[in-house]
Image 1 (spheres, rainbow, N blue to C red):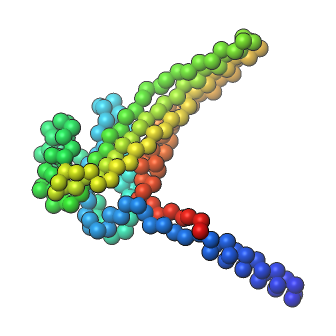
Image 2 (cartoon, helix red, strand yellow):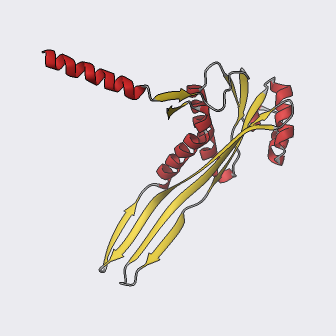
Image 3 (cartoon, helix red, strand yellow):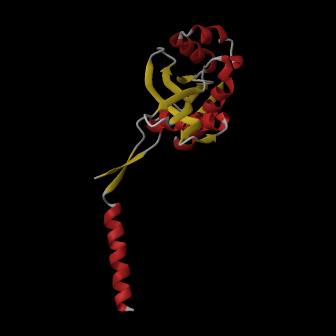
Length: 206
């Protein structure tokens, strides 16, 4: 029993020593001073509107999960009379107009760019062949001051996933195919994790 007790104490001390070498660093972007911010549904082309809505919702969930003391006003172009401004791409004027109409000090705006399924091929000297297809996307989000229209924070991320593979070796084919919708869903999740990295606290070794 004494030996076991010594081992347990040593283990506890070792864990404490390891933990002492790490310190939490606050999130680079602290929204609490704003108190209330707006989030406009990310823009994209019409064909990818569902993905844009999904990315916006996941961004909102990540923001509220990592930032405390912040009220988030979620808006779409249909929620405001600013549809023409949103379509024009004049983000500064849009931000200032939202500040006047919604009484918010800052607003998040984002742009989602999604590719279609892209094939890739490779031929070997031995006569083998390998063909694959992938989907990719890029998300850019920025926080604008509604008093000046200036950008106070900006983040972007890119991601891709393979949706199918075809390999030919020794005259025998090998095929692997997945649902592109599943791949797009994983891409959106990775994009949101990437652009929200500044909203999360981190741990650094000291």
